Image (cartoon, rainbow, N blue to C red; front, side, top):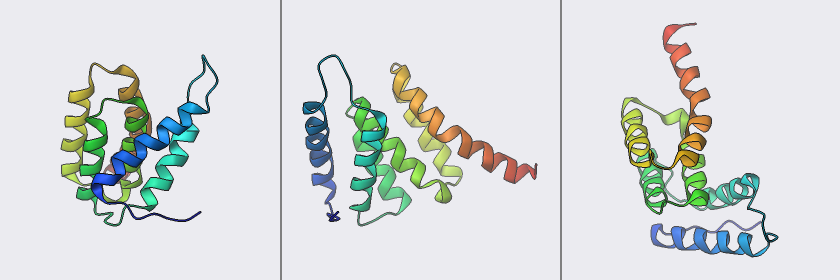
Length: 129
């Protein structure tokens, strides 16, 4: 598979196009599988040239502002991929995301599932449990 390097402007557009393609291959009454969105997420992530945590979180913000389930899954997948770079500021970012998404329980549950284990691991590390 060829890796495409995306500009920030093209990334959201291309993600939406790929999601539309996925929807076109879904039977009526069915939905896109989370695994298919995660595959797309991995493909798009490889194309991000600047994987600095602040840059990746800025992209996540852009995707989350769309209030779209598929884009939310991608944003949280990218944030999870940055887990080794989490710091004290990270939790403020997460808090802001959760605060802005409280009305969308499905997106919040995806976020919590993806990050709870990582957060618990960090807490255990700091407490030496």
